[in-house]
Image (cartoon, rainbow over all chains, first blue to last red; front, top):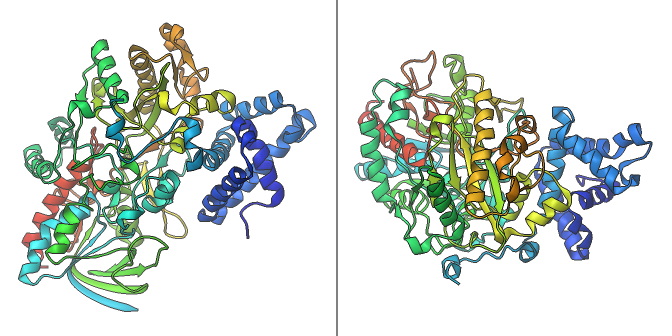
Length: 134
Length: 497
């Protein structure tokens, strides 16, 4: 069983674009890597953790209905950000932690791609001492 | 089920297990059979690639992100031939007298730990890095602390032929770091000690009887034993699986019944990564990442160290998301980083327990004093960044994502306690201590001052779980000194057991 359904992947990607705007610019290969990294990370986690992540993904998607009568992906971007900021800063502890978990897997899927490192200004090498003085 | 018999079995091969193995190895000449059972793999040299996710997955439990039960802190600890010594930065400090005196463990003297620590400093080639090997990230920290009048010292490190990959926490790809995987374990093996990798000890079933399982992994060298279940017998057992796994093994094996302190008094030096952005690129990921520390504020409950982390770890440690977060992340070459370590007290309620499957879970609640220390440490770090020339600073408890240079006189208003919510900010720990603490008796400790489990003459502990309270410094040299004592005790008693 894959850790997330197609619909959940689709939503995770749209949520990811709010968390990391440059995710929008990823090419198909980059998007595949994003998905592969997250799928591998989730697959290593206990099923209870996978379940919690699916649950929280659903909560982020549908909770805005209560306030704005629209699912997360139908909200304008500033309202999406407002909702995410509320989750991060002012929501009860469990919700804060849930967002932290989601952010972490999204960041892993993007910033964990070694291929993107040069775009981040990150170009390490094994012989770093040679680069210390110009 | 396979069966094996030894005189001495050591569980774990990190700073503790590796040191015990080497110290006891000469007994092999007299016919003693000694084995080290290590849960993790032994990687081939070409497998040290320096790739962040790949190496984290291979060398750490849960890729370095083990959550506490409260889900407010992640714990990073290694699982490999060499344990966490494969993935530390090699900073090698000797414990000062103050903490050892405060521990008040009968029979444990600072002078003894000092003597043993000095031995390991020599053995591990510990020295100060030459000045021309210091990168800007480190140099700027030193200069700023000096300018501000903060006490700052250079870290001695245990490297040989360091080429400055900056990848210490991912396992040195140049084989320069002198962890137990490079020094003590090869020496022990050369003297006749067997090291069995990919071998998880599940339980201690009775007097010197261990139930273990060897599993194949898709990476690393094959284990010397075939995959399968094993019953391993030993006259003496030394548990050295670290501050999470050692208490868990003893709890699973039923020792909690007569040792109420087992698993308790867990401390972690809870840590935050703080970031300052400079107006132009600096050298930060080239060169050794951790050259200086500032203990000026130790009496206020925190230490500051230089550090440089990798993209994913950096991203998850920043608070926030969106444009500002991405902007900062796309300037990795301009980032100066400071690691804050809070000096947390050993409290009985902070502990390792078992879940329904018998796996360890760490219960940890931040004390008010620790939260106060973390808050103050962010303000001090912001001052250091600005004194170093940073144009803006990111503090996890900031009222806004960036604190600009022109706002540096408003740090009290911009870095606030209300934003320091556990679960909102990303707190991590790599200095896990306690759980099998040394002490006078079984009421509030697990072992005596020589690592012998109270009331069990054939069972010893030799790792970071022995700390009665936090070390107040990077702990690995002290772990080796503890292990040296344990080895001495085992050497003198193993024939009688």
